[in-house]
Image (cartoon, rainbow, N blue to C red; front, side):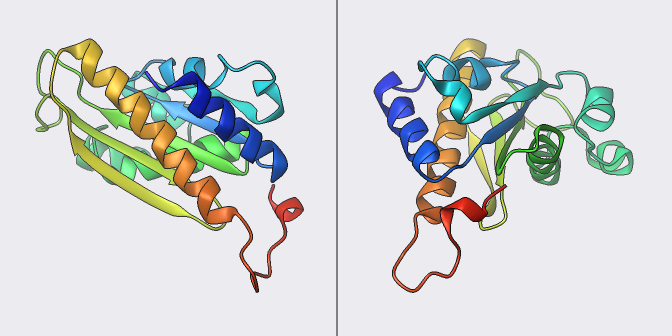
Length: 173
């Protein structure tokens, strides 16, 4: 799980920039939101989250295209980005995080245990990362949470105004 001090620093940066995060989680089952809300005052930068463990909920709650889910399954980079976009939209956050993968014990959608996709979506930053994590089911899920915090931190770092950058912190949703 992420270092609480690091998460607190991330919250402070988000609050300075008036940024809010929303999360759509599959394999982590709420662990990302739990890690984010451990910090006192997290409500100033966390809008909320969706636990969309079942494939049909990815469509009905997070807005993932049913045709995409049918064609590729739930464990796919495009599904991760759709989850991030859905989290952002459904929670009216400035940044959305989406995570999907296979924690085991069995492969899913043709993907081996340990496959994890983490995506982030915002007006200024949209990326998806893929990992092949090792270890127990619990270790994979915890490592996935760390990757989500890393993705959020990268998005926030990209937003920090630079000389000559035209966007202002208050312009984020």
